[in-house]
Image (cartoon, rainbow, N blue to C red; front, top):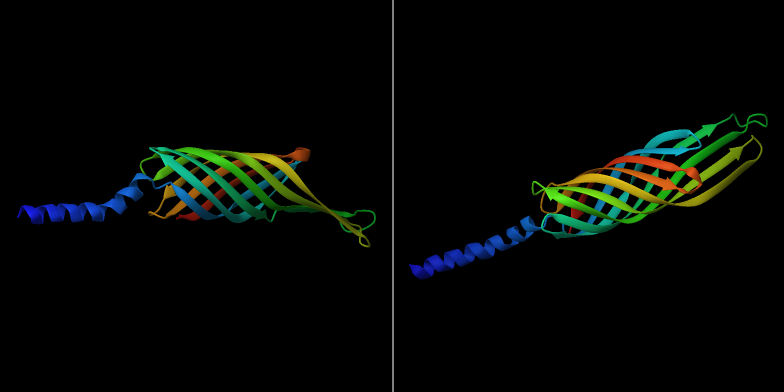
Length: 190
């Protein structure tokens, strides 16, 4: 009887070990995600709104309820603003936000066992294109602008390997260009 009880106890401990490891650190390890959201670009007192979309990847380290991580992201945007009529007297001038590359870190705190509240900061590089068209000649120019990004968000562990998130971030680039973004994401941990 004693051997059977010991064997059952040992078998239940071995079976529970993977579940304990997942519960102890649901915000650890590599992750990938897709993001989509609102994008507002501001420059020279004007602004335009659009949709951002992209992918991200990162690696998080969890110690107790504290999480630290590194991350990278590649997004694009449909923000575009044009004025003018494509004539010599009123040339059409357009500005378009392009791809955005981000590399940074985040730090956060786990609440309730399945929610991570975090703040982030890092380097961002965005491409902006400008064009002018007077009906006969079209000129186009593009710039890659360096900047910094600050943000905050919440990530919720849907399962042991998947999560959803919501995030707000602010980016400040060269030449007086700013960006406000609010996004949602869905991802997986490995």
